[in-house]
Length: 266
Image 1: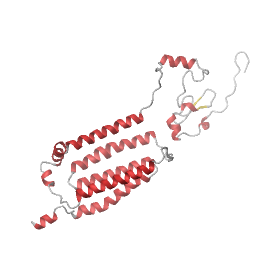
Image 2 (image 1 turned 90 degrees about the vertical axis):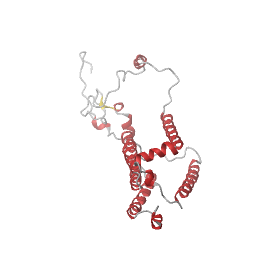
Image 3 (image 1 turned 135 degrees about the horizontal axis):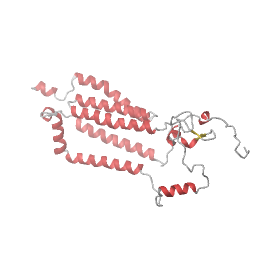
Image 4 (image 1 turned 45 degrees about the horizontal axis):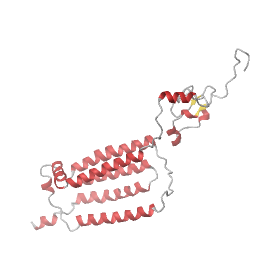
């Protein structure tokens, strides 16, 4: 009985080996996520950290948390981030100029204070405490035990976390919301009339699409105007901002020969 009580809370040898191998890799991936320049590489490193956490959960007999960590966070949320980054694109050399003076110092002080608070709380919760009650909590299954704790003993913190997630979603919507003009929204008829009443009728019939009057139909190849010159406005602004288009002048057909009209003028 004394030997059993001494062994309670001690890490078994396979779990210790697993922790000693994966924990340094998780820490290195976390640091790499902060220092890498490309956003895609940062997202991949964050996905590795989440997979490592899932392995730790499964090793601690929290199989449900491990599966949810892989399926929801790594498989859904992180893949969504990667798809958005690859479709929209993020320029690597972003500006590092401080728009608000002193915000970097405030951020460092706040991070150190939060880190010290987090370390103290984790230390008080783990040091000089014996891990008991895991078998009783998982008696009817890991999912049932977790649900019983969340919706009985920890229901208030669970609702607070839900409110924080909703607040983060609302903040993202507010930041991404574009400011609309104060004037009334123009109808399609008004836009068409303004197009023909403008100073130039060059784009009265609309801008040409990529591949029109051209020898290629790729979206990064500009359309050709009737005189053989490339139309720069036919390329999507997203591709132009990312720099994924080639030199449009190489697709020009050259100068076209002039044809005499019926009056004899050229």
